[in-house]
Length: 421
Ligand code: MTE
Ligand code: CO
Image 1: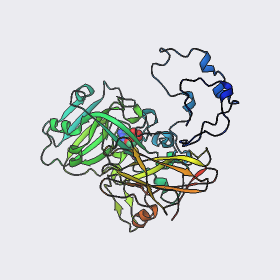
Image 2: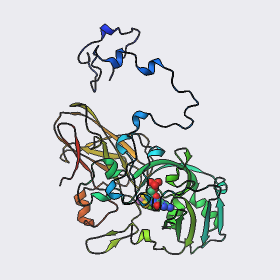
Image 3: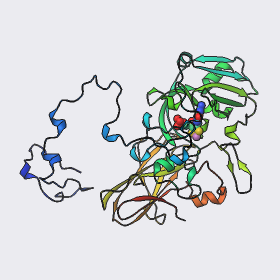
Image 4: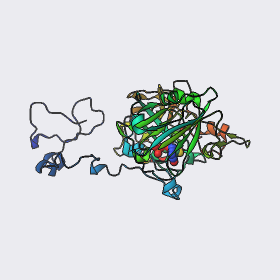
């Protein structure tokens, strides 16, 4: 916390050495030293004119933020065309993921779709098969909602034990965006769903033609055909010009570059809901149609990519939590591996099926920490430990790992991905 001078101008000589005088200092800082050129000398940016308003017609972050990047995991990326990269959760705050940092998952690369040539078709068990242009879609009443999208495979590499060193890699297959779009129910009503129509099949226009079955109940509830994210057009990576939004349900169902919706009387049993996105249980049976994302949370700072660098004293711990079933009224935090739990401070808007931000401000004594967070959702569901999860699901799974994450922090403030039981 820096000292604010009111009315008097501090001279170079008047700077005090040592700690802040008086109470109220939370985090120290402001050890006033006349030797610090950063405050007593003129900096380059004081002395030259900067870029004009014509220099940056589409803004990008400061060059000092260039390390804030989506990243892939090389050993997971045999071929970048059909792979995944991860959101740098440890560099973000609040609840909205900036468009350029939303993780990407493609089965056949990024389709570059011309919106003028793009069409969305509704066929199957409907009174009137319809084909919409983008302009047609934009004339339906639209809505705005903030939702998280989590790939069902998020944290999938962690089933066998602690693997990846960083919340970007263990938990970064998630983004949280404000979508603008048309409720799917309005488009289905326009086509007129026949009484036998109990399912829809949604299909993408990319080379993978990715498709999934969705029960009609969900389609008529809160699904959206979205064309804007965080106020601007969808990014090509996220399905430009139009994608399906399936709030709270696994990311694979959120078909990008959506071009067709077929209404049927039963599920299609597509590849992505049989051979993939099913979980083999210890008894040899597989769970399927596990659409909802269970409540989950992760501490983003401190974490392996974001160690404590300031030494003992006031420390800001923060993280995110979400649930496919509602809101997150409460997150607990432990500093000692689950012996003592304390409620975190929730901050920011609490939207249904959206990410939530939590903080836990504490005085670090410089001793090792075992950090964990535990989310409670609005249905009363509590995030399980990894051991509790494995007791039911075994170790064959990839998908739907929402177990509690542990970071071990040592005396130097360095954090590491560990498991404790
Ligand atoms: N839609 C199409 N058409 N093609 C795809 O490869 N990938 C799916 C889904 N929709 C995919 C798709 C998967 S597995 C996920 S997790 C999400 O999109 C990822 O969305 P994102 O790239 O916006 O993060
Ligand atoms: Co996915």
